[in-house]
Length: 163
Image (cartoon, rainbow, N blue to C red; front, side, top):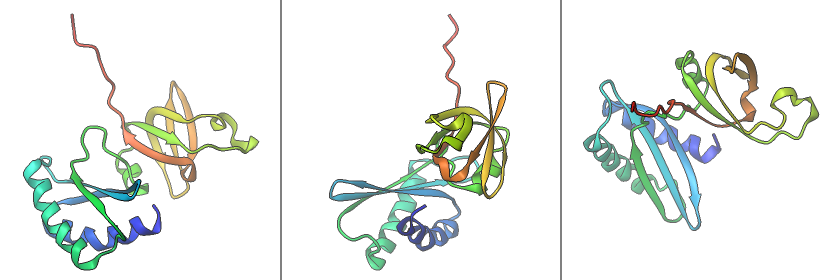
């Protein structure tokens, strides 16, 4: 997480928690001359449109007063959905045993072994610590350094409907 995203999390998470929601995480994405702030929230029983609107109203007020983003931005508040993003070690530990889709940053080093040219891994999350995660893919355990993880989500296998 970059410094701006970390500062936004510290600014917004207490309010989201006080409203009774879990702050799942946030993405701060550049879109040309406009930033996109995407905040994921959850709670037992799930999150609906009214929940997202409630949080959005509160967060908008904080962003207007504190003005942490220079220039125009778009605010999105969303449920994490079935393909919930995993934002860090806390999430990796929480979802051990679940199917995950891991996108990797490129690694030019020859010492990267079996992950050297890989960009995507789909498997079952086996373990996580402060430096790496272990994913079982096609019967093989892959050790992935956290610095190679560019994005991670829960993965839902798509099945064809019965005929």
